[in-house]
Image (cartoon, rainbow, N blue to C red; front, side, top):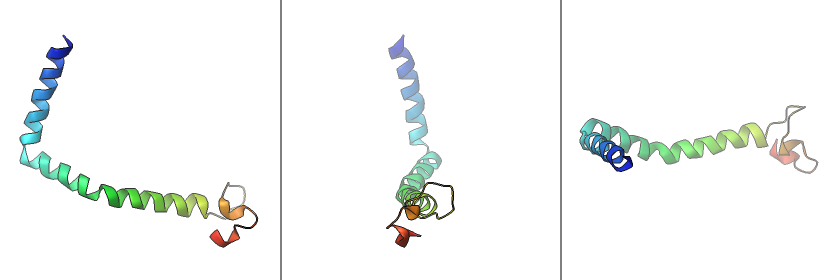
Length: 69
């Protein structure tokens, strides 16, 4: 039963893989993924690590780490 379901999914996946429209979307996302990851880390760094708003945890609020803010 499990093999039958897997064969059905594999057939559908092969059909989608052979479509040039889906392939171009897949290639575009895989090309942009490193840029998205770097942007995510920069956003986290600026909002979490360097945030000097009182009441929130931040490394910039730790004594000696004020150079971050």
